Length: 436
Image (cartoon, rainbow, N blue to C red; front, side, top):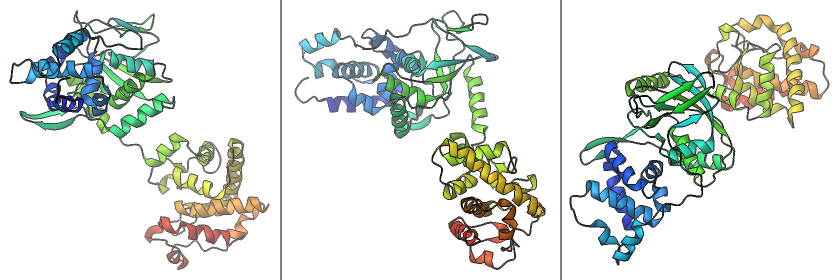
């Protein structure tokens, strides 16, 4: 490069023009067509303009070619921009640049996916390897469309406000790391073949007998949901071609108006309560004990996956509170212990419900209130440890007055209407310990 010109200045100049590029799809396509002769795909161009880290890591030739195109499209001056940066011999060398890739040839349309099922009108589901997700983006098959992406964000530019790709860098890095390590959890992505984009007016061809789905020539495939995962898998793919794992992809063939309706429906979906997330994660052995207790025994139908307990429905404890209590009172070394501990708790609860079932719907009794279970689980563990038959449980529980107006509850942190302060759970546990 010429004296006074640096890589840093080049990146800075490119970044100034990126907001103008992302608001003009037609210009982006023109830039892509020009750079395609250098084997720079639209997926790669989008990766550069959407992530500064990719700009910083790109080679100098790609930055110069992109910078030149941005100047030609948006600069007021018609001066030879490239001549300001390079000597004539360097310009000649740049014109011969071809982006090399250690990966397979890019995907071109038509392209056929196998083992695809039709799940609705113009909707099809396929299991696609993570490496293919990255390759689709690299090849410019999948694209970002802010008009239908619920995670688009608004950005001020000279001429007004535009919508740009809203990606969380920390999330991208975390997903990419998991993909590279082969530890990325399978989830569902939604890709939409834009109606009217196919070269012959048709975007998809589904063969029900062969269970194949073909993306036809000219088809534009917008990311309807799953931008973070798609972009992260592309980044991971550029570092490691043989990525492990797959994603479930729902292909649709809808207009932008129909896509927006889908986004509205997805936005209306209720958030998953934290107890349910913990249940689904199964990240602790104590969680697996609770799952066993939900399947059979006295607590079946009484453990809720929601955050709010409906005592009128017979519910008495949340998944997360019961799991935490079990982890606190029992030592779980392996999965063999899961079945054993579940049996211990079931046996304990069988006698508790037999002796005190009338208290279940008694509003004036705290016997079966949710956070009292930290005491029940502790007592079950102690009785098992000391080889005390559970049929004698009433001899211990009768020592406690569970009436809500018992002054002792105020001392240990009971609030009005039977709620127990979380920071005083240890006092409840200690009270039950003193029974043995």
